[in-house]
Length: 109
Image (cartoon, rainbow, N blue to C red):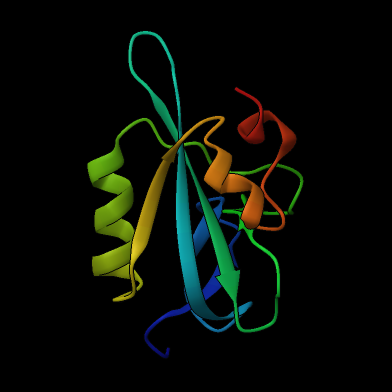
């Protein structure tokens, strides 16, 4: 397995380090307000994509929502070896519009 690469692992239902979808080039995170805690969606841009995509669950029918930002950041840094910058935006931030592929619900204020 090469560092910084992702694949979808059926047994766990989440993106994991591997060779399946290419090298992880960029990451942004959108923080959605939530009760009792905020929720976080990681958008990934891989070597095979020019757009950001929400971190997928197995089968591509849905995306992963994280409740713990620290665990998400640890996964990106420690498990996947991503060393690039990670920008965290609040949901509805105007800066999200420059990132192609961000879901409409995260663009809305």
